[in-house]
Length: 456
Image 1 (spheres, rainbow, N blue to C red):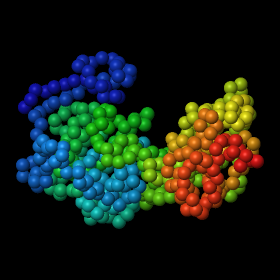
Image 2 (spheres, one colour):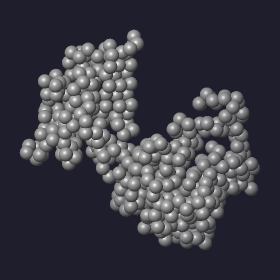
Image 3 (cartoon, helix red, strand yellow):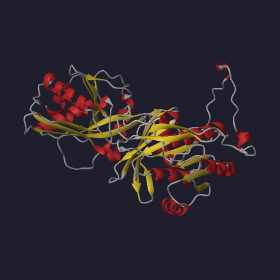
Image 4 (cartoon, rainbow, N blue to C red):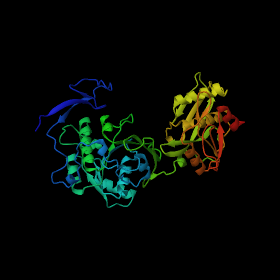
């Protein structure tokens, strides 16, 4: 048995120190440094010598890069189109995925729902709920699946012993903050425990080509709890966002070694679990029949998915000396830039007016293609004239007041046509094939042309 070793960790950011001190030098928090045992006994491999998994384990040896096979391993289909899209096509064998989100947002519900739907043998390990509680939730979601196994355990050595017996194809851990190992003497959820248990799970996943999904807690700032190294160790970091008081949830990838981080998954929380929203425009565009000023529709892209989103603007006279500029779901600095362009290049006097901008649906959009819709919404609210609901926009606005082309404009036009829009405003400099669309395409070169077309 090795000598017991201890060190000091900041419980807020994970910084390591040789001795105790009052303030953490990294995050500047006070009284967050605590002593933890980092080595208690000699480590052994997670697998046993008589384990069937030993035969499946991969032996690593040096290879010439020219000899490495480039044939991609088949991904595991999760039977959930939204999750597959965010992951990049499904679960990669041997990958480690970390899912974070607010308490009560639906992380466990999503993972249990997927575990029940999977055609593969799945082990759902819970350290937060009893087997009876999980069974009650599973019966509410859907009929019980025969391929899903439930284990209520927090010690990694016992978990690996059960894994060796049933040989699951996928392992779900709920949550990583509840696990502990015999080789670390600190409490579950501490910096050293999270790091060590994650390292053991990574070794298991890579040696057996078994995908592992971890559910993680987050801090009050919205970051995943635990040391930042946790996010560096895993292959994919997913964020489950939304408001518990509303029914819609958004799944994003903050890190993905096997796919894009620009994809978006949208779910609707119902009594029987989470429903996939295959057409996000149904929640991002209001269904009002009245003609309201200050609203404009934009064709944007999130990864490979086209979305039609509604931009709302409110322009009013400033009551106080300094006009307010507020943007929700849109970059506030970019809003200030567009307002300056409208004042300088289009002659609209907005310097003494309050301007509020909102992207409906609770999502945040960074696509510059919504610039023209922002311009239209602001001008519509300023002169109190509604824009035709069957008209949408897809173009970027430059500092000279020019309307610039955006990427993949054909995909945006097709989405607008599919959703019943009759006209779309794009840049004059976009190159698109002729006579391939049934929608009316309006090409403009400057902001002046948009103003003339919309308001005469």
